[in-house]
Every structure is written in C-alpha cells, then in structure tokens.
Image (cartoon, rainbow, N blue to C red; front, top):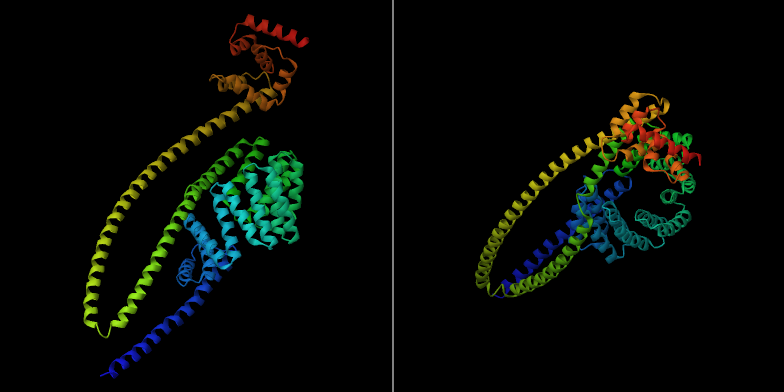
Length: 525
C-alpha cells in the first residue's frame, strides 16, 4: 500500500519538470523575436523613416516588463514613446519616456535615460513649456557623460529655450559651451545648429551683421534636411539690412531647397512670415495677402496640434499613476506570496485531504464567481456613466468647434476688408504723390479716411507710408504748430482749393487764410 503514493509522487514531479521546461524554451525564443522588433524600430527611427504603424513594439515592451528584463525594457519603452509620438498620442508618449528613464537608471543604461529626458524636453517644448523643457535638456546633457557630440546637442537645446524666453545671457553661455563641444567632436550638424541659434539671438537683438556672419559659418556645415532653415535665416538678415541683391540670391536658393525637403509646420509658418515681409517691402500687396492666408492656415494647424494634449497635465497624471502602480505592484507581490504558500500547503495535504480540498475548492470557485459577477456589474455601471459624460463633452466640443469656425470666418472677412482698405489708401497717396491735382484720387482718399473718428490718425499713418520721415521732421523743427496748422501742412502736399481745405479741416475759408498766414510766419522764423 505504501508503494502507490511513492509512484504517484515520482510521476507528478517528472510531469511538473517537463511543463516548466517548455515555457522556458518558448520564452527564450520570444525574447529574441522581441529584441529584433526593438532593433528594427530603432534602425527606422534613426533613418527618419515612418514608424507610426510599428505597433509590435508595444508587445515587446509589455513582454520585457513582465519578464522583469529591465535592460531590454528601457529601450523598448523609449522607442514605444517614439512610435506614440509619431501617432500624435502625446500622453502615451510621455508615459513611455518616463518609464524608459526609470528602467534605464535602474540598470545603468544612461543612453536610454538620456534619450528619454531629451524627448520629454521636446514634448514640453512643443506644447509651449520652454522653461520646464530646460530642466529635462540639462538632465539629458548630464547623463551623456563623455559623449561630447550628444552633450553639445542637449546644451544647444538649452540655449534655444533660453532664447525663446528672452534670457539672452544664459543663451550665449550655453551656446558657447555647445559650440566648443561640437567642434571638439567634429559634429558638423550640431555646430551648424549652434551657429544658427547664435544668429537667431543676434537678430532678436537687432545685431544683423553678427547674425549674417554666424549664418555664413553655419551654411557650409548644414545638411540637406536643415539647409532650408539656414537659407531662410540668411534671407531674413539681408531683408532687414535691405540688401536686395543678396536677398534675391538666398531667397531663390531657399525656395529651391524647400521643394526638395519635407518641412515641419513651424518652419512653413516661418517661411510664409518672411515672404509676407518681403512682398510688403516691394509693395506687392496682393502676394502679401495670399501669403498671409497661407500663414494663418499653418498657424491654425499648429495650434490644433498643440491643444490636443497638455503636457503638464500629462506629467501630473503620470506621477499619480506611477504611485498607484507602485501600490498595485506591492499588493500583487503579497498576493503572489499568499498564493505560493497556499499551493505548498495544498500539495502537502493533497494525499490525505483530497475530499475536503475538493469541497473547499468548490466553495472558493463559487465565491470568486460571485465576486467577479458583482465586480463586473459595478464596472458596467461605471462605464455607462463614463460614456454618458464623454458624449456630453463631445457634444460641447462640437458646439465650440462650430462657434470657432464661425468666428474664424468672420475674422478672416474683417481682416481682408481692412487689408484691402489700407492698400487702397496707400494707392491713393501714391497717385496724389505723382499728380497732386488729381481730384478723383483725393476724393477717394477723403472717402476712405474721413468716415470714422480716428481719420486723422489713419491719414498720418498712410501719409508716413508714402512720405517716410516727413511728419517727424516737421514736429522736430516746428514745435509750436497748432493741430490745425500741422494738418494744413500735411494737406499742402496736394493741390486743393480754399474751399476744399475748409471742408477737410472743418472750418471757414476765412479761417483757412488765417491758418495759412500763421503757418507762413512760423516757418519763416
């Protein structure tokens, strides 16, 4: 009778060993497949290829986390974030980068942690949180250690954020460090970017000669992808310096480079902004208006992307979820320990208490089923409530979008009318400048300007556009002119009758003669 339990135990242990061996073999094979997935996404990302459809990286990330293989989990989390960001799922991307930083620091993988901090800085920058992005870029620079090229890129990003928030002293400090590291590592791309950021800072400080010199140093180092930006900045500098020949040369090169590149929306907006200023400088108002419409559309697209997700809210949500996940992991560890102890106890008593164990097992299963049913009912109720709330939010959002579209359309019409009116005023002035006795041009000018209460302000603004510097010169040399005398002085540029002077100035012909006499006396003095 004692032989039977011994035989059962031997067979049980043999079967258990075989069952445990099979999953180990399968896990090893799957681990190799998951590593291959991560390597493939990494290669495509570095080659600037589209990775938005590489969803298998998420499976690899989950696999390595479940296996507690944190060395592979760190890069898997990092490139999962890259895929999420390519899909414009910014909240999920932020969570992945945070996890990559955590796992990278756990296993000493400073490369994954550094990349994660840099990409978090990019997310913050793209959402308009430049001051917060500086902290992450600095953290990335520290994690790179002896990698001069990577550290130069991070410090260059810190400098760029300081330029955006108008901290120019700090910007030049970090630009100097980044330039030194880029030159030491012979990283031409980063060095070109540093020179370009130098030029941006100088332009904002109205130091256009220094900006031009920096851009000329950057242009030979710039690769094909970043060349349109360098050419755009050079064209801006020559436009500010009114160097039309150089402007035309670099503008033509920039437009040619743009045709061969896929520009970001922010770069497209900068190009349209430059083209607007260039068109206005040569009096091409029709082209300026068309460029303004294109610039407005790109700006609205950028604003739409930025409002899809608030990165600061994502960070707060991530920190809260991290605390909840930590608590859940602790509870799960305790539950696993209890289950293991329970299994050991059941194994020891299985031969002598099989009937009692079956009864207890049956009761336990019934209790679990009842608990699961109750939990399922609660979840269904919560999901229905959440769906109702989400539908209400969606309806409200649709309503707001409709209102916004109406406002945008009205604003566009108003902007166009004002723009065309200003162009008409300037054209009238230009006609009167060539032929002061043209009564039709003056009537058109009078009709366009003298309808509102601020017509003299509009008149002076348009007059300054055609005769730049004249108003300032009159006010500088003749301080004691009355308002009526000053206005008569401006109107004297056109050949008007005494009655027309009186009508425009709102006084009698007699008073016009008095104003003219007084003005002549003051100017003779």
